Amino acid sequence: MANHKATKKDIRQSETRRERNRYYGKTTRNAIRTLLATPDKATAQEGLSKVISMIDKLAKRNVIHRNKAGNIKSGIVKRINALA
Image 1 (tube, rainbow, N blue to C red):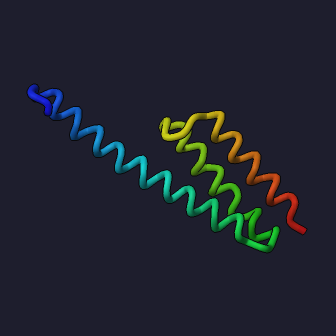
Image 2 (image 1 turned 30 degrees about the vertical axis):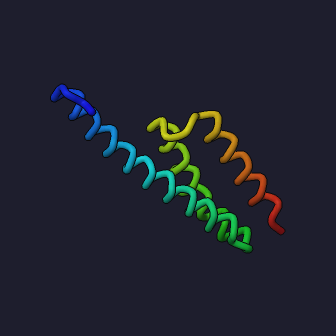
């Protein structure tokens, strides 16, 4: 267990960040799941920019790596373009 004031504060801060990062990550995953479950291409195109923005924010906040963000976005766009 931490003995210094600064270390205790660091533990509190990291816990807060962890909770926040989990929330953003889970919210984004749910948005991606919802987008990919959409059978209509026009509706999916409308929601695409919102989901891509969420993914970019995760990468900006270092919740996920920027290369992973690119891979996720690429896969989503491919799946949406494949819709008839």
